[in-house]
Image (cartoon, rainbow, N blue to C red; front, side, top):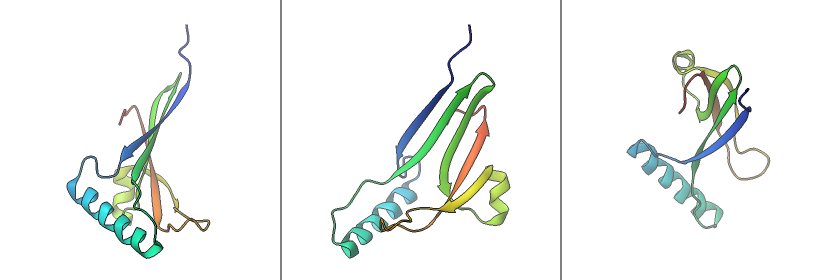
Length: 102
């Protein structure tokens, strides 16, 4: 019997594994909320896990690394984040890795 293909989305609190990321993210969000005169919002990191008959693939959104770090981190695409008048701006990279679970 063949296993069904699945696509799971994960929302991970920003800085779940690193204190400096958590603190700097909260500081940035507090300043952005103050400037935009709105309540603070929770910040999340996103990841997708695709499971197919060929295997399991993990894709995560991460900050853009310098040119030397792209290949080592498995970056397959980069692009703008928060465009379209929603108040955010910046860049993000997509990492993809076969066989990893997180």
